[in-house]
Image 1 (tube, rainbow, N blue to C red):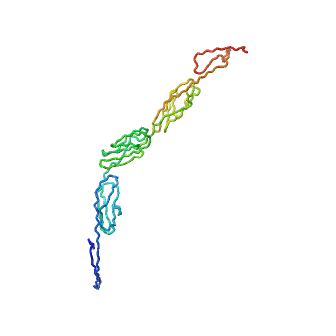
Image 2: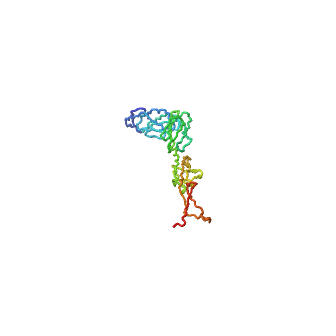
Image 3: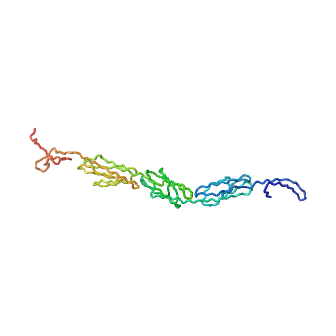
Length: 322
């Protein structure tokens, strides 16, 4: 028996001898059939979670289970990623043998292009200008650019930005596609910038003199310097970090030099300076000479530095002096 509504039954039992037992009354209650509001068709974007909710369910014994395609569960909703357009169904079940009820709806999945971001350069010394390009096969994407250094821009698929400070920068995009979908993505540490080296040097002794004309140069350049090019003019060149140069020892002067330093990226800085080599006034006066025409120590002369070409002297004989 499968009564469609509540029914009162009377039962009489008769044995083989024709003896009857009864009648006995029996009342059958029939629960209402399961009911469920139809699922509503929906539109979503690729890789965007979609929430689905069963509603308006009733009937049966009230112990409801919902099968969204992966087995019965007590939850009347799911959140899922739908890779492509399809029908999604839910089947309502109760704890009795009430016939299950299924509802389906079409979910349209809007596709978006794969996100591909390129740049003409991603590493260099500041200020570093970078030209970004998002591959836009739709031709109508609007992009919110975030460059990672606090600067932002809303524009199209091409953007240029100049980084003024040193560091590693994550570039983030929010893309509004023509079909209404929105994509968010980030490219971690996409751009790296470095400080230009600062060329600095000192030398010792300072000042040098014609009596001590050997000068040791010491590089003080920062930061991250890996190469040195010294140019001392007539005194040669050097790629050592701390070269040594010997200047003339006969007369003082000021001598220029140029230092060009570079980091591993080839970014350079130049220092131009002068090294002073001071004169020192010195006079050598003999305390004896022998003008006896024997060929040795015949002349009396005064020598030294910065002397006038002409000089006169007087000699007095002290022979016979007491």
